[in-house]
Amino acid sequence: MRYSRAEYAKILALQQEVSRAEADYQRLRSAYLDIAKNEPGHEVALAMIGADMDRAHARLQALIGLPRLPFTHESSMVVRREAQRHGEVEGKH
Image (cartoon, rainbow, N blue to C red; front, side):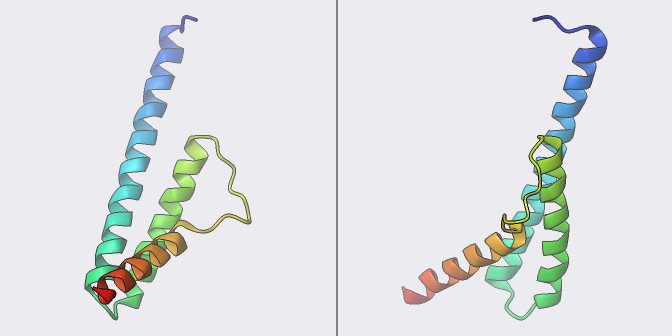
């Protein structure tokens, strides 16, 4: 299957946009986990980063063609549970 130059340019642009969206999401996820693990009591910062992370997650889903389903967990909720679980494991050692 061959693409015209215009179609190929669109595909490359979409791949770059997906790559940027993935990088944004990973950067926000890393910041969220860092604060959740190392800075207890910063609930406002976690809420702000979590909201940004949820928007980045939704954007990434939209770019790759996944619908936002009402029964899926929000990404910040999943990361919060992961951070809490990590803290519980470290506390037991």
